[in-house]
Image (cartoon, rainbow, N blue to C red):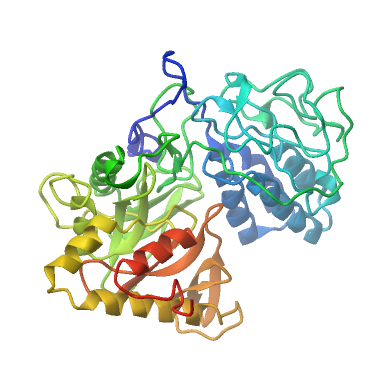
Length: 473
């Protein structure tokens, strides 16, 4: 019996950066899926049905270090929006208010910055996240624009929040196991005046430590351990420039390990709700303890692939040759699984954004692209880039009501979309990511996946195509 929480463990090396020659800092993580479990139960009870899990997944992914400062608040707003549609379900609203105060992951052990924008729903006014107890309460990650919550001048005691006014949350613990009330929206301390409903600058900053989001949607709660699910593999907080990126080889090797692990999974493998994986070449999501699979588009299969600009891996639908090329470009040897095999018939990896969403970008290596271009024999590269641009332009015109053919994959409103019974069913990408068509590297064609706009533009540009993601720039 394979548990994804063990399948994805210890895949990313943890780097802690300090200005002084002090011992490496521990990384503070949690089982992020636990943060919304109670809310999903309340949502299901209230009649939310299939709407509950997608909102839940987007929400708990916002707790990863790679998310923007207001992603958690935006997710809580979505949770309350649905609660209001379901007869203003009080339990859902209460749990959303507690969720928005859950600490976020801190791979560098620094305090996580606060959102500096007012929430959409007044129920969230004056609420902000606690910090984990193991954080360095003299420092914050990021650009230092969110060192106090919106409307406050200080947080006292440090690390507290309205739901837990006596101090920070123990490392890796869920706030919803400690409190049942979201507390008074006056800030987590007695100091400073709260004006959570007031307007502020819309500037937000990302935590400096990067999270290598990958296949699984749960993460390890062990604060100092390197075990984590693929959705919470943490990388270094500072990345090297150019070809000196120290994580490149590790990313390739981690992708190989994931592909080898996925080869052992079947539709009957046990799993944790919210986990994503690849089963039999198809993207698989764990729903009610059982994998539900979605086939990749024709000619492609599910693979774990290395990220390019940060530590970690992503999972997407691609061709076997494309996956092997991207992994080889990192310096990793042994094909897609690291054992010398490039047969992916059993190595099924998950398309966390391509054929079913909400994961990290599938990284097309610039090195692979450059090598391909240098060969002079791959005349399809620029065509792939231009085709991706055309698709992105077409996707911009689609809506949830657009007609489609069953089995088609597309991007609709920035979300991954699959056509079911003649209608698009959308799944939101993880925090900070959007859906894009991207060029394949080692064969003619494109893939569709969740990534950043900068990453999509870079990969399209590497083919020689000009004009950005749509060709119109």
